[in-house]
Image (tube, rainbow, N blue to C red; front, side, top):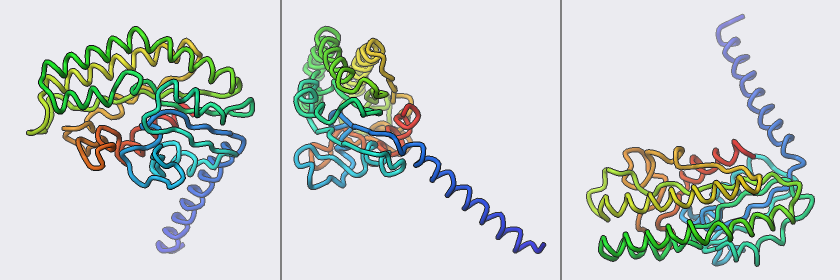
Length: 265
């Protein structure tokens, strides 16, 4: 057999293998009924390409739920995550898509309850002491009030979708400290903000475990790709539109959140 023919046969076999793997992946998800709940980190705010039907919820075709759906072709896909959502908003506006036939649920939630947006605004625009005070307030809320809210929400998800695997995803550190950024907020502020993420993730992980859900910690996946990171950044710093700031960009969704969710789905 000639060398050209050998190469041709090898390439054909590789192409068939990839096609077979893709078909098998989709076949495995054929009976999956997937509901994507949560806040802006699940909606894909910061990654662009927002769908017109989602309005102010800013759901993106580059968000990890949308990417997972495109790759796996589940039997049904309900994408209702919404920018700015709190635990109460999920209960009021998103749980209607769940039922006994739902087999897979994803969610990020808790950051808005703890005042993520206002804390970031304080840290960017105000003094170091004001920033640290705002972070401590957010951490106190996360430790003392958020557990009950998450427990209530998770209980309702479990009640409405008793047969579903529920994957709860956490929040990444926003900053690499020390990092490569010359301008912007101080390392003291950056460290405090990362500490707030640690507190949030600890609380969320505990409540997810209590509910029997799977928690995926994305901090290690994002390590080195935070704002001020030495590698490609998967998170937006201050940007326009301002609502995209401090959210994962398209790379963060595709390379950070998607593989984390896929590993648990």
